[in-house]
Length: 346
Ligand SMILES: [Zn+2]
Ligand SMILES: [Zn+2]
Image 1 (cartoon, rainbow, N blue to C red):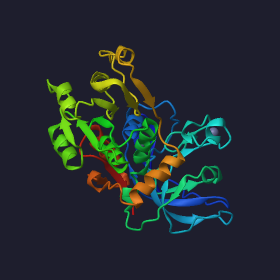
Image 2: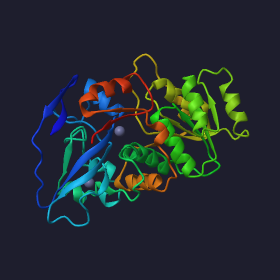
Image 3: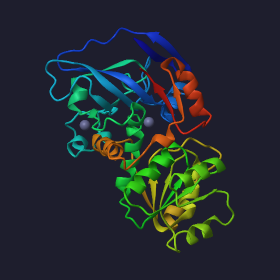
């Protein structure tokens, strides 16, 4: 079978690998779609702290069960599934509380072991115990759509932690894939006023068409007043930066109202030339809420959002590539071309 292997940063190689053998307690999943994440690009170009080489990247996986060991209960051959990428230990204090994304022993597909940029992936006993196989119960959902469950679940995680209500004024900075997924999660939860700040005019227009109540450029001179006006003088309750720049974090702190909340879910890229004014957290008594990835529970919730059609990710599908074209797919991500690039396999 075909697999794209990262030998070392900068070195992605298409290889022919042995087809995995399905043990008694295991299942085999044929990967049908794997969404490329910015993290994959980072791993492929500069590496990542959890990465062991050689490694097959890809953690946003949708596929079909093609074989099942005789001791496996509850999954069917032919079943359409999302694969949750985190395998947790099940016994640590975090796991016991259902916070498996924070498990002390967490192993992540595409980092600690091989991920979705291969034709067939083996789900072993520990992974099955960790409930990574997420059965899809809506046959109208395409595999490409199913491959959005992981990033969608990351948005569910941060928004669950933020505890907003329908009247919260939410600002999202960055109108790319994660900005729009955050919009969809917020709208599905009944948040009435969601505002986008984005530098690219085309993305602002697209954001407006897809449901943002108002859109602005971050460099607008009158931005703070505009935000007051667009929130009935309530001010901005919550900001979720959905782009990695230090300037976006700074802008978030600038526009939040006093006692507002920063939702910090994707980390910040290093920038030694610009420091966000974190003293604003002090002066304005801002709360900072972090989130890291998603738990099995968030994946289930994201899956339900898609199955019930409360969230439609179709407008975000912009590029499809074959497995052997993964490097080209990574270029789309690098150049910010489109909203998503999905590796599609038959
Ligand atoms: Zn991802
Ligand atoms: Zn654990």
